[in-house]
Image (tube, rainbow, N blue to C red):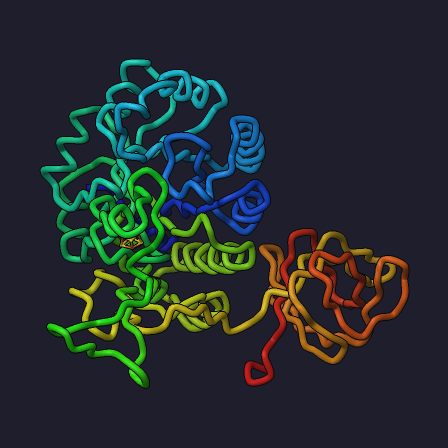
Amino acid sequence: MREVSQIINGKRIIVKKPELLAPAGNLEKLKVAILYGADAVFIGGKEFSLRSSASNFSLDDIKEAVEFAHAHHAAIHVTCNIILHEDNLEGLEDYLLKLDEIGVDAIIVADPYIMSLAKKLNLKLEVHVSTQLSTMNTSAIRFYENLGVDRVVFAREVDYQDLKEVREKVDIDLEYFIHGAMCIHYSGRCMLSNYFSRRDANRGGCSQSCRWYYDIFEKDQQLNHDEIVPFSMSSKDMSLVDELPKLIELGVDSFKIEGRMKSLHYIATVVSTYRKLIDTYCADPDHFNKEGYRKEIEKAANRALCTGFFKDFPNSQYQLYNQRDEHPTQDFCARVLHYDTSKQEAMIEQRNYFKVGDTIEFFSPHHENILIQVKEIYNEDREAVEVANHPMEILYLKCEQPLSEFDMGRKVLTNEK
Ligand code: SF4
């Protein structure tokens, strides 16, 4: 059992700080995740990875990702977590050797052959057992430990009591999901997409068939029709923001945020909130004030949130039977490219509509949130404009408080002020 906290100068502090592991679907998101506080980022290559549509990292991109991460004292984990069919074997050995040569810190794997191959090739990188293997008990963890893997990523369906028991019994690194989408099946064992859209969920092609709308019949009678809304099997997303202190006290090694397909704003908001929470709690766990973190997470929440399987089996309150729309409470409208201190002016890239008179909240890993009311907007030709309605347009805004590159601006909705 690892020591989680110590009394230093009469005050308890957490000495075993968990790793914050964030997702990234491209290099821009990866840089934002690291700048906003991720200790490690997981990405998918173009081969052998799930989420094929989010996996746009070529080997050159992975090299750049590793260089950027290491320069910022962060790590890169690459997913190689498809279930291999015969025709997926070709090129695997070369690919693993290249990842190792590039300096990737870990691969996340689901197929036992990749675990054994990584060991046979004597790679320097760590091997992590993917959540796709639905690992939920001590004996299974010991089995993987005996194969020489370095970490096990738990199934999302493991509850707190089981997690606590396992943590007390095994010493291997454990990774646990703290935030993101849930499957309606055990991860890695769902074939809905394979049957309904002929896309292999376990080779990166999940079409999210569980979230489609379905008509329901009892014998020949349709139960949901006309005014009755369609039915879907979608779960609310999971957020353990209120439970994080319990997880830190257990000594879980890594906290994983799901969502390689998510937006820049989502990644920045979620990563920075968990970063602040972990740092604040670890510095003084006995005087921790949990206020404010949930509200911050909800600014980027695409869907309603729940605690997944953490507390108990989910009930009907955890499901979204007929809502798949995304409902962020604030609109991401600007990314800061540069701040001119002498002119007190920010150069921004427009990301969503806003106009003169709107209030924008800028957030950052470097400062507390800053609210500004937009009084003037200038375009690249220095002409005053009333509205910012061209995606990715370069614009200038006055702001007395200094901003930094990669700060994000979100439009505050009227009822949020
Ligand atoms: S169809 Fe739904 S439950 Fe199945 S793998 Fe895809 S997202 Fe998960």
